[in-house]
Image 1 (cartoon, rainbow, N blue to C red):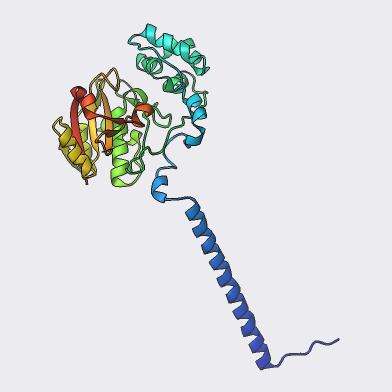
Image 2: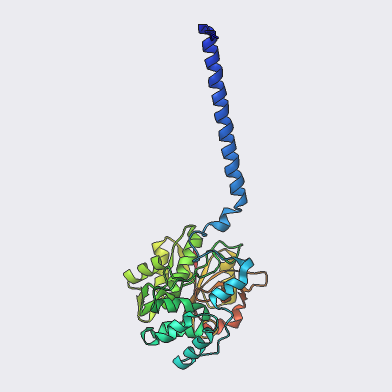
Amino acid sequence: MSRKKLSGKAYKKRKRQIMRNRLFLIIIIIVIVVLAVNIFSLGNGDDSDNRFTRLIGTSEYDREDDEKNKRNNNIDVEYSEATDEKGWKANIEKAKKVNENASVILENIDRIPEDLLKMAGTNPQTIDFVAKFADTSIKYKLNYPNKIYKDVDYPYYIQWDQRWGYKEYGSGVIGSAGCAPTSLAMMLSGLLGYNITPDEIADIAINNGHVGDYGTGWDIYPFIAREYNLDIKELEIDKEALLTELDKGNPVIISVGPGTFTTVSHVMLIVGNDDNNNLKIYDPNNLGNSEKTWDFDSFKEEVKKMWAFSE
């Protein structure tokens, strides 16, 4: 059976029809792809809450699986108050019941610096971090939230996160001595809107002479403000002065002495306040302290300095 040959006009008409059909098919495909992308984006929720997700935390924090997080981070161990090596070792012995890495610390106790031994003996969450200092083959996951308060756009960092915690800093490492660069990194990341990590700030502090065996000098704060074109204001140690800056949306770096938060001097970031004017504090050394609010008057006598930052 022979195929009828199309005339020149019919052939051109058929060709135009085929081209229109192909163009229509391409448009349909593009529309489907765009719809699929939009649906996927909606499913992921508000991007502002996920801005730091790829950076913060060794692994994602799952609040629905809080019991697993407690086991991983050893926060269910009850420590006794300890101020010397004997007390620290006694607490680490307790931690052995829930974390075998506590045994690694005790077996290598002569190789572990005193500041790290103190960490493990006063904060059970740091057992894995200190154990890995002695045995780098240890693998563990540190579960903590990327961000604690949804109404303030600041990431939360723990100074002994293993991604930067072992970096040398002053007479120790960021994990034990890096509360200042960690607090500054949180403040800058939130205020400027892009990721800045504690090790980056530690490098700036070291390279510009703002850190020594004593820790981080207070002159780092105006220096960082100049480096990042920020305004800085040293505040009186006064609750109203602090709340005034927080009401403006300005984060405040606070330096405290021994007492409520640690047994040594410490630096933290205040990111806001609640309806009762209790403070939302990001403590880089303690997640538990960061997940509750604080009355300023309860630790006012321990405050040494306060600095407010703004763009």
